[in-house]
Length: 526
Image 1 (tube, rainbow, N blue to C red):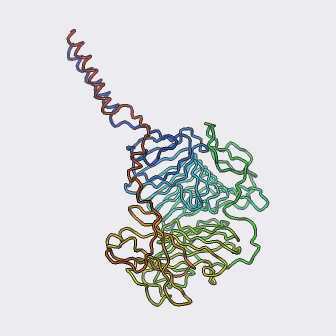
Image 2: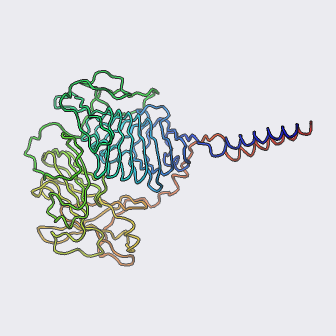
Image 3: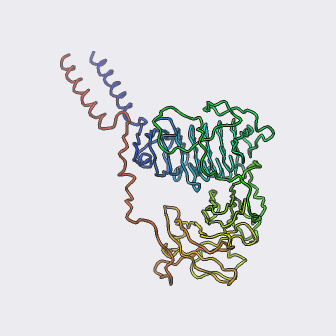
């Protein structure tokens, strides 16, 4: 009798302990709390449930097999305005995002992966991002039942990657899917592009289904024919679909509303009107990384070892990236370089005249540019060129308020003992044949890189330099915009995220103690 009793007791205690320790948890993020803090508190296999609201923080995710989903399942009431990076430190990270609106500012990426990780984004809206989903080298992304709305590129990949895209709609995007080369592949099933023509009519263009292909193609022969809608689309009118609208105020509707509203955004990313002034002719280049689409007006691609339309000899080019956009009079112009092929992150300016579709080339150089006679003072980090349009457009009076964003690797800062406050940017003045030092601002930094911006009178050849620690620069060149008093532990301390794991270690101890007392009582009765 006693042996049976102790056997039952042992089994019960093992069951209780096993159910409480190591169980996957549900972590609730309340409106106003930090998603990054929730990620930091999570363990492999946990689910992070985000309550309705607008969340502005970005997050880096290195925990395996996290599921991050909106509580309501309705992307319109759970809006994320930051960017999310998967696998910054650890490999083999698999993350699922479900039921969000990723709201961008035309200069960002909603979700990006680094080496040897995977990610799934589903049942979401991705709006106004430069690249909706960025697939880093040796990674893969799965996109299911998503709407990409007015993104420059919906999904973009580097070499040695795979894109799995099913039941997606790319609405007024410059480019739907860009496949990196070499050995980038895509599987596309039941995806469509929706374009608004000059009359305001929207036309659906099916993307041809493909398995393990190297590029996507569209069915442009019968664009007005009804096509199979995405799985979560309940509308049957496929010739003139209703225009989606950006979510502005969180909705109280808790259903998964994936039909598209009727309001038209005020300013499409790529204008469809014909330029009223003579456009500047742009260089025609074959980068070896086209996506197969023939009607897109905005794209970006990375390559190495060639100069294309640049005047720099190809043998001196270490890597380059090309970006295109439509330049309209009076509108701010931003060329972003999401492939990270060079040290340049973006260039900006304002156009006085409409120039139409324009190409910008940025290129890191192996050595000093062959277009300059010498180098400026200081320890050289990088020489690079920026070419906007052609015929001197980048240095013309047709553009103003020019600026450039660039990055410096922390490895150089540490290995060469560089004083980061001495980092400077020089531009070569072709007319006077001299280097001009530009004031730079340190706008952000992390463990890997420092991010700078600088105003420039034009675009041509540049050099980034620095001085060793202990050597005073003759002219202060860095203005920091970083608040040094930022609480580095904020993400940890801000975590009031409630964790619901089943039983924690303390609870297990209390339960085991209570059961032991009960057992002792009954044992004495026997």
